[in-house]
Picture 1 (cartoon, rainbow, N blue to C red):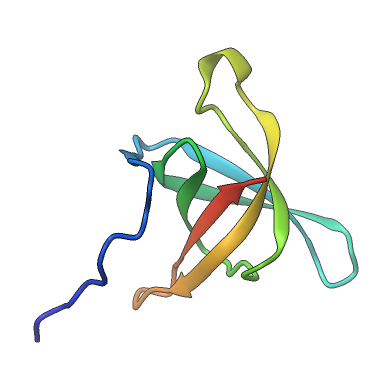
Picture 2 (picture 1 turned 60 degrees about the vertical axis):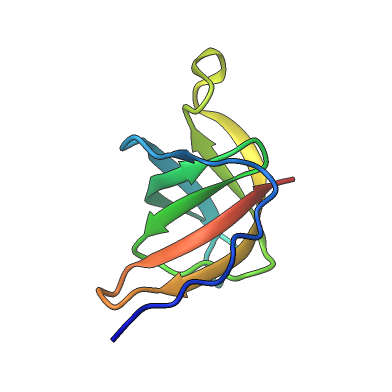
Length: 99
């Protein structure tokens, strides 16, 4: 079975991830902070692609911490979840845009 891919819609070039870890801060159903560790898949000037073990709600705004900029390591950045999809192995991939 051939896999067809949709045409590239991005306006900014992405850089492949290099095994960096992204800390994702969300809220649980009671509003308490919940931290999830994710793997960086790719990054650009406007956002990130990550792989994680829990779903994120598309349209939600969350905080991430990563060391993309060595001068500003682990600085919290607010992002919007543009999409999140489950993969066949049970993990999730998400596209995040800096706010």
